[in-house]
Amino acid sequence: MLDKRLQSLGRHGVDFITGAGRAGALLIGALKPAGRGLKLLPLLIKQLYIVGVQSLIIIVVSGLFIGMVLSLQGYTILVGYGAEQSLGQMVALSLLRELGPVVSALLFAGRAGSALTAEIGLMKSNEQLSSLEMMAIDPLHQVIAPRFWAGIISLPLLSAIFSTVGILGGHLVGVDWLGVDTGAFWSVMQASVEWQEDIVNGGIKSLVFAVVVTWIALHKGYDAVPTSEGISKATTSTVVQSSLAILGLDFVLTALMFG
Amino acid sequence: MISKRIELMVGLFLLAGISAILVLGIKVADSQLGGNSASYQLTAKFDNIGGLKVRSAIKVGGVVVGRVSSISLDEDFSPNVTMDIDTQYNQFPDSSSVAILTSGLLGEQFIGLTPGFVDEETELLTNGDAIEDTRSAMVLEDLIGQFLYGSNDD
View 1 (cartoon, rainbow over the protein chains, first blue to last red):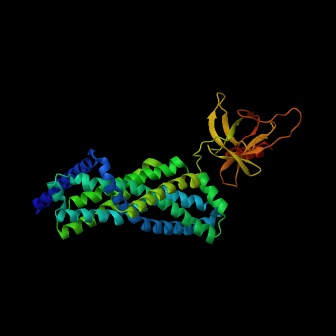
View 2: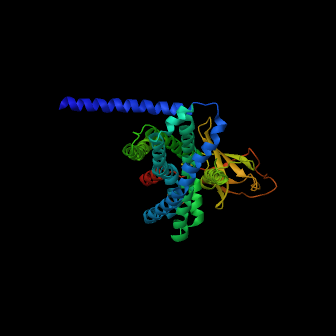
View 3: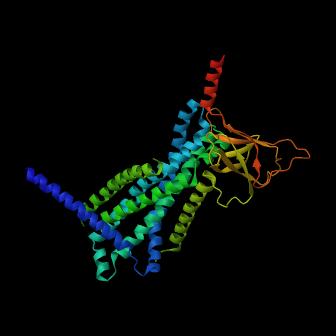
C-alpha cells in the first residue's frame, strides 16, 4: 500500500519534471530564430486574427460591465464618506493595477488558450505535425512560434482595451447615471494615476500573463495524448492551470510592484 | 493565403490596442508626452512642505497654472520646491506669495499662489526666479502641540 503511494508520488514528480523540460524545449525551439522570419509574417497575422481580434468582443463587453459594476459598488461605499468625487480614482486604479490585466488574462485563457490547445492537440492526433516534420518543416517554427507571438502581442493590447472600456463604463454609470461631477471624476483620476507606477506596471503584469497563458496552452496542446479524451483533458487543464498561474503570479507581481 | 479582410481586421485591432494605451497615458494619467515646452520655472523655499508631492498642482484662485516639478532639500535643510508654471500665466509680480494649502479637510495638498501688488519697484517673475514670501504647510501635530502648550502657559 505504502510503496504503491510512494511509487505514484515518484511518478508524478518525474512526470512534472519531464513536462517542465518539454515545455522549456518547446519555448526555446519556438523562439530560436529560424532565418525565415518574414515568411512567418502571414502566419502571425492569421494567428493575431484568431487569438486577438476574435477575443475582442468578449474583452470589450466584460470590460464595460466590470467598469460599470465597479463604479456602482464604489459609489455606494464612497457616498457614505461624502467622497464620491474619488470615484474616478477608484475605478481607474483598480482597473489599471488589478482587474484589467487579471480579468483579461483569465478571459484570454478561456477564450484563446483553450482554442490553441484544442487546435494543436487535434493537429497532433491527425498527424499534421508529423507530416510537417516529414516535409522537413519544423512544426515548432511553423505552428508554435506564430501562435506564441500572437498571444504575447495580443494580450497586453486586449488588457489596455479592457481598462479603457472599463473606465468609460465607470464614467457612464458614475457620471451619467449617479450624477458624480464629470470634472471631478477625471481630475481626481488624473491626479492619482501615474504613467510609470500604474499603467506601465499593469502592462508588465499583462505581458507576464501573456507569456504564461500562451506557453501553457501551447505546451498542453503539443503534449496532449492524441486521442479525443486526451485533447479534452489537455484543454481543461490549460484553462485550470493558466487561471491558477495567473492568480498566483498576480499576487507575486503585486507584492513586488506595489508592496 | 490569408484574405485582405483578415489583414484589415488585424490592423484595426493593433490600432485599437495602441490607441487604448495612448488614451490611458494621455487622458487617464494626464502625462505630458510632448514634453513641457511651454512652461517656465520658479522656485520657493519653505520651512515645511507637509504632504506636497511632485506633480502637485499650483493654483491661483483655484485655477491650475502649473505643477510642482521637483522637491529637494537645501544645504540649510529647508525644502526647496521647483514649480513649472504655464507660460500663458507669466504676469506675476515678484511681490507674489505662495502658501501650501490643503483641498478640503483631508484632501491632497497644493501650492496656492497669490499675486502681489504692482508698483514701480516690482518686476515680473521670470524663469529661475525665487519667490521669497512663502507660507509653509499646516501640520496637524504642530497645531495640536501649539494648542496644548498655549493652554499650559495660562
